[in-house]
Image (cartoon, rainbow, N blue to C red; front, side, top):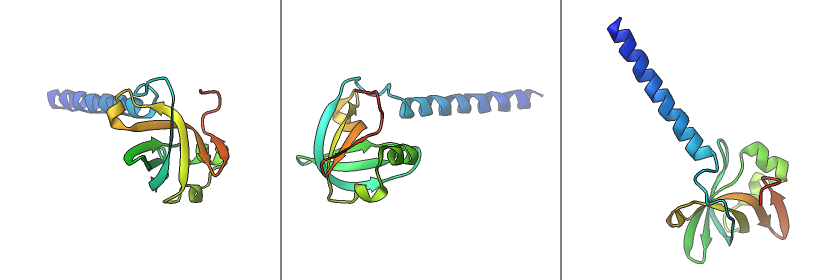
Length: 123
């Protein structure tokens, strides 16, 4: 019985840790609450769940951009081909509270003069 209790405790602690990691990663708590406006060329794109991730070159610095989940990108009017390597993209979104991360969660995406709103109502 003691072994069962210890096993149950281990499972609980691991599950709690996974929930905390998921909340920290998928929420907005890691951002500043303000917006930045970045323009650069797409270096790579990995689309899918839990969200897409772009690497863009902004004046010689590589930034990581979190775009939406596949359904959110589609709802905004974006297609996977829009994120092709070399495409110039403008991102408006919330940066990491640690600016050295050079990471931003996109709220709006601009490609070829078109605006794609990922999070309506966020500014």
